[in-house]
Structures are given as C-alpha cells and as structure tokens.
Amino acid sequence: MSLKAVPALLLLVVNQFAHAELAQNLSVDIRSLSLGNAVTADPPGISAIHFNPAGLSHIQGLQTDVQGLMLNLDIKREFSAPPGFNVFGYSDDPVVCDVPKTQVNSNGLCPNFKTSSSKVNGVSLYVPILDKFVNWPAGLPVTIPFAAIAYRAPGSKITYADAFYAPLAVGFNQKDGDPGNFMGQQVALERITYLSPSASYQISDNLSVGASVGFNYAAVALKTDLRFPNELFGVLRLVDENICAPFKQNGSIVTDLLLFGLCNAKDTLGPFKKVATMEVAMQQTLSPSYNLGLLWEPSNDFAFGMVYQSGATEKLKGHYKVTIDPGAPELIAALNSSVTGQVLSALLGFPGAIPTTSEGIASMTQEYPAHFQAGIKYKVFPDLQVNFDIGWTDYAAWQGLPIVFDRPLAVLQFAKLLAPGVTADSLTVPLNYQSPWNYGIGIEYSMTDRLKLRAGYEPRTSAIPDNQRSTLVPVNGAQLFGLGLGYRFDKDTDIDLTAAFIRSRDSIPANTSNLSNSTAIDNLILNPYAGLDVKTNTKIAILGIAYRTRW
Picture (cartoon, rainbow, N blue to C red):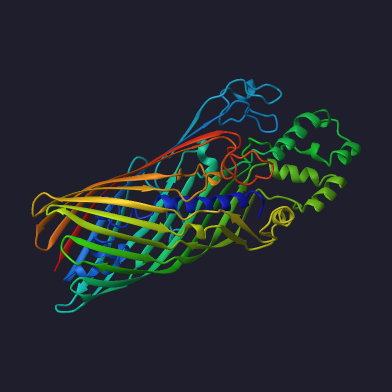
C-alpha cells in the first residue's frame, strides 16, 4: 500500500464522524422528527425502543408500526482564492484558476481567479451483499423503510417489542471532474439496527422502566480522488520545471548523481496534480449496543423521561484499492535509476517501485458514542402540549482513532520518525472532538379528537473544533425544523405524516483547518484545498409516513 492510500482512509474516518453527528436520529421515527426529537417523556409508539424503551408500557395487546422515509441531500461547496494565494509560489490551481493551463504564466502564477462550485449529484448506498456502491437515480429521494412489532398480554405489566430501523444511513455521489471530488466522490455511511429485542415493565400506574438490546450492522465506504497541495510537492515541481529543464535531453551520469536521478522522470508530482483514486469499504456485521429508559407520569398533564443509549465498540474491517496516476511511479523509478537516488530512497524508506494499482486489507476500531437524553412533556392547555428535551453525546470519545494495515508500509516507517502515534503498520488519526449539550423543543396541538398538528425545532451544536472542520460535510452547527400531523382513523389505527428540514452552513477561511485547507508543511495528508477559502451549505429534506395499528 502506498502513501496515496493513507489519506483516503483518514478521509473515510473523518467523513464517518462528520456524518454521524449531522445525521443522528434522522431515520428512526417520523413522529419524533416532527417534534424536534424531543420525545423522551412522550415516546412514539414502538420507536420508544430507541428514544425511551420505558414508553413501551403505553402499548396494549399486539401493535405493529410500518414507516417509510424519503430523504434528499443538497450539499454545495464553494472554493475561492484569498489575496496572496500560492503554494510554494505556485497559484495555478485548476480548482480556482480561471484560465486554461496554456495561458498560465511560465512561473506558475494564475492571472485571474474564479469561485468554483461543487454540488452533490445524488444519493448513494453501500450494499453489503453486492459489496459495492449503488447510486440512487439523480434527483430522486432515497427511500428508507423500517418496521416494528410489540405485544403486551392482557393484565401483564411487561411489554415485549422488536424493531428494524437505521440510526445512521446517509450517502452521496458527485460527477466526474467535480472540484469537490478530492474530499469524496462517492460516500456511504450506515448503522442499521436489524434486531432490537426490548421489554418494558410498569412498576406502578405512573412509573415504568425499559431496556432494549440492539444488534447493529455498520459500514463505511468511500471513493475519492487524491491530491496534495503542499510545500513539499511544490519543491518537486520546482525541481522538475526549473532545475531539471536543461538536463531533460542532455542528462549524464554526473547530473544523475547530483540530482538523484530526478531529471529522468517522464512525469512527476506537483501541488495541484491529481495523484491517485482510492476506493475503500469497511464493515462489521454485528455491533451490539443497549438502551435503558425511565418514564414517570404523575398526571395526564405532565411526564418526565430519560434514556441512556450505550456506546459500542465498532471493529470495522474491509478492503481498499488504489489506482495511481503516472507521477508517483515515474518519480520513484527515476530515483532508483541513480546510485545517489537509491541511497536517498533507502534512507527515507521509499519503496523500490510503485505499482499503478494496489489492493489490501485495512481495519479500524472506533467507539460509537454513548448518548444521554432527558425531557419533559407538559400540557399548557388541554389541547396544547409542549415537549422539551436536553441531550448529551459522548463525542469526546473520538480523541483519536487507530487504523491498522495488513502489512508494514514503507511510508509509515518514514512517518513514524516525524509523527507520534505512527508505527510501521498502523497510525492514529487525531480528532480531539468535544461533547456538546443540545436541546430540542416540540409542540403538539390537538385540533380534534382525531387530528393532531405538530412542530419541532432542534439546534445542533457541533462537536468538531474549528481547526478540524472538513469540506466533506459542513457540521459546524446545524438546525432541524419539523412539521407533522397525526390522524386517528379508528381506535386501532393511526397515521403520522412528517416533513423535516435540516440546514448547516459553514465558512472555513484559508489555513484554518488541519483537515481541509492548511498550508503548514507538516499537514501533508488531508488538506486537498490548502490555501483556499471554503464555504459549505448542506440541506437535507425529509418526508415520511408512519402507519400504526393495533390487533
């Protein structure tokens, strides 16, 4: 495995955590979305398995829930060059340079800049059985079904339940040539609860407790282009275009010895050149977790609930494939064509050759964060109910993440001399996330005995420090707005309809994020937009329907 595969795996990790935060509780229950997920004291049917399993005590007899959710992603990014933009003196970055390469000055300076836009083309899913991406038809929202069943025997204090749902399911794809492809052309992240045996116990008329165990499938998959706009790659371009130019056709043993054979390269690397394309997918078929809940309802007008959703240790394993552009193989071949170049390669731990394609196995262990939430419901008037929740998610568990490879890597043998947390066959990605508190508020108005109207709002504080922000998905704060209605057809049948909208905007000025646009010489791995100003705008629209019936 080459240097080019390492940043793609790091990108995969950063992408998973960014999406996990933004997409939390978006594909679990329709009614909850319409109330800003403020439902700990007002659990929604059998979906109480997730939000507060103590709420299963509200169920009598046999009940089934079937829900469907349609989700549409609108992710946009803008890249622009600030005054004085350059990487090692070069500014002809095709992402922002507004002239053809043939019109760029001979010294690599761009005479005119543009603001470049990137846009998601459609939704992508990773299908484990097929072991590949499936791109949803462009412009068509992805449909996610989930179902649940619960039973409480007459006269019993115990309710049993099970549900299939998706705590996290999101993915997207972009067209070839999109400037955003250096931070993911195809992305899919999934955590699917396929079994969740649960039970609640009604201790008294107004107090219940409950628990559920989740059997989860987890997967992350990514296809991305790679480039490294860094000072070190600027040096390589300078050597090729300025120092080696006189010797390209007139080389000799002397020049080979003095210049380490670099001038023999037919192609080389540069700060703005695409270096490789990387595909990687990792999964775990069983990742267990559990939920514990309590519900206290002293009157019809007031209730208090709380839930603890455990963390989970995810041990993901999968495969990678990297297709390398000519620059890197040519450069290594040129080094090895000279005696001094071979000595330099040995000292730096460079491989003897770089194949145009390589494949292997990678694994990583991560902590899916624990979550605590508590809330109340209160009937201000007989027909108007207000829900309010506060919640905390342990994103601080993501201080760093170790990735292990199936063989020692030459690049890591070199990197371990410079970077802490690196060995010959592993490295640790520094994240330094924080654990924020958030709140949600929901309002439900009973217009008639059959019809209820709902509205909700949930602002989401980002767990990502400013210097770790990524262009992949803007997560430096988000807002969820929900609207919905519930209609009771008869005493045994309810329909819920919901429309929800999430927006998240971010601005990442040049050289402020170590995972997007830093120009520091030691930030080589994950800064494909080094020196550029980045703006991001994400919108997620959700429509859903739930059918609940008792038998």
